[in-house]
Image (cartoon, rainbow, N blue to C red):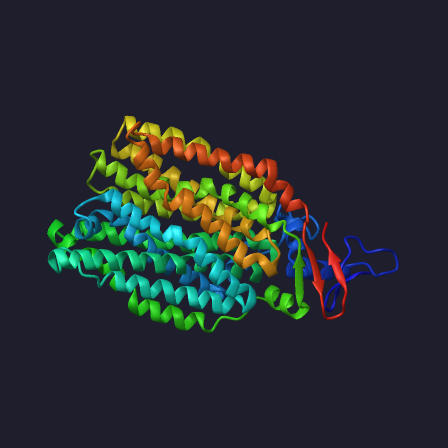
Length: 492
């Protein structure tokens, strides 16, 4: 048999005389879980279809218990992910007071500053991704987190028009631009680090549920940010919010941030990355370039929905006249994303990534346009609760699971961190971070530009996945060389 990993020999079906029964099944299970040298067996097994080579997942005893236990054993990256998304989302939920302090109330300018972090995310994804591929997932995760936490805390300490007059406003605006850039670099690396670290550490049999817990942790960050914003708007007067209230979500990040960094320093390296280093792999082939391009468009629907349908829409609702208690509906939306993420993870593990990805995008397309239009025509609390609140929350949680796992399964471990960091973050930059700016520009033609934007991006992602993504998940276009014994494994 061809040697493909130290201590393992792989074939799909054991021939006669090679041993049968439980021992062979256990070996196949372990091989599929480890993902071999370059992760392509991780792809071929369940990236596109259910985990049939191992056993029927519906019959695995303790599926929910085991996946929850894995999440509890790997809670550090989940907490770090949640904490950092709280910091990032706080800016979006406080655009109005921030614009008053730094841009004389110009929200378009502040949304552009918000998008600066997204513009810088792909660069951060590549830089920190290179660290992750060359030095390990653990140091890359830690470096990204340090950058994000420091940038966040300093944003809350900037001078502004209310704390420094005209000169303070100019200095604060310059500092805000710089800190948003550095925060974007860190978030770009952190996002790829979290996805890759957990996907490579998780047993394949419930990797979809692992991605669900990652999605929930990010949703928890958004939930805390929306809750904090709603509390500030409810408890403080408008002057208090403008003077110092908007600073609190940034400043309170200091102590928890130090704790998170200490916990991250205790992480262990992922087994799959250690196997790759041990095998001394060299990947040949340029197929990762079209895969990165495809990933950008396959994640477009999710990126647009998260930042137009889940963040910008509440600013749009308030601008159209419904101002009181709207942020509490944003809290409800984030709550609804949690069970949706679990359902999406369960669907992915049982039906396969191909089926789950298409199902989630169809649901997103069917929900986004109609509910946005209905909300525009009937702007009342009941409609906002049902549409942007509940249904958009379900779509948001479902999208997080399938896009994260798709990003991982497209690439071999030796290129994975940088490829995910580049493709995933470019998509979030173009269709997510810049999404509110695109929509605001288009609103000069129609007030429901956001609805068409959500539909267009969802259909684009679905089309690219059906025509190219499914083939990429099934086809192996990389070759992996191992210098140690001069053997070579080709994946064609």
